[in-house]
Image (cartoon, rainbow, N blue to C red; front, side, top):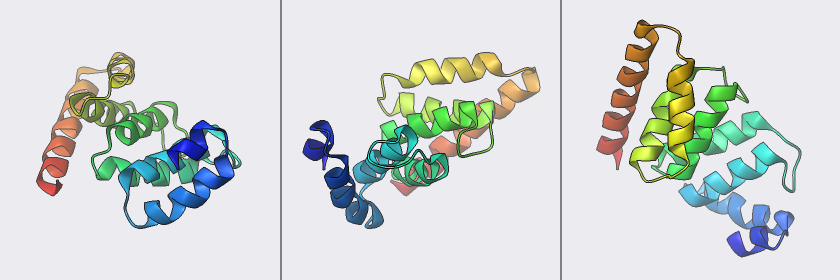
Length: 135
């Protein structure tokens, strides 16, 4: 799938990734989410992007976590939430995604009160605990 994607054959990449994603392959789920978000080989559909990215993120896939956080930051395909954006991007950063710190920091700077900052750190802690137990 990745070879097809990298060569610009998005239809082939999608046809390879879809059955894998439906069978819980996190990298394929993230790939589909990315394709739906950017409209590669398909119409832009941020609700479908969020669906696949959430599945990838729940399976511990750092790129899926960061991209889901970005969708929350901008309110694309999900309800806008800087708290959720922070939590997912913080998890992605801890899981090794080098780009997640920008999303994490932007979300943190966008929070308007100390209460929201505390809620963001609490949400991140809960997410870390829940997904650590799962994997």
